[in-house]
Image (cartoon, rainbow, N blue to C red; front, side):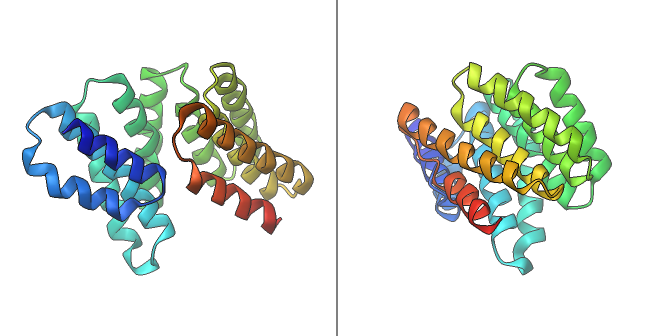
Length: 214
């Protein structure tokens, strides 16, 4: 079952979200350990999230509801820090888009309390700040995410920090700064690929699209 979950994670990293969901679904009946169920739910949570925000508009609500449910299941089933960290990073996002904004902040508060020093938790927090149009706070948090993650050589999270900072800067009309952050994010995602051997294709494509559009 470990191989199935590793393959599903690889598919997710490559942006093949429906394939990852299907692979896990085909093997769910054989998962009898809670941590296996939690890992399957965590991966599916992220897949459904991106299928929701990047897929057909008429499927958005359904996909995001699936995402919310999967993240909640992962948190309920897992005591593993890495799984909980990832699920906490994800859950506030579908909650917010589905209109459950108070709950999204509550989950973010829980995440910060459980993982106060983790840059990825603060990265999700910065997205909520941007969505509530507190752009200055979002920029400040994103810089903290970038610096903290880079010090750990966590290039993917550092890239997220820069990309999300670019999004906030763009909202404030600080276009040249936004362009610079998008370019740095792309380089960081490529560094992540070199160091880890994993794909960051969807993140690179997303940042590249933003860079070209500003």
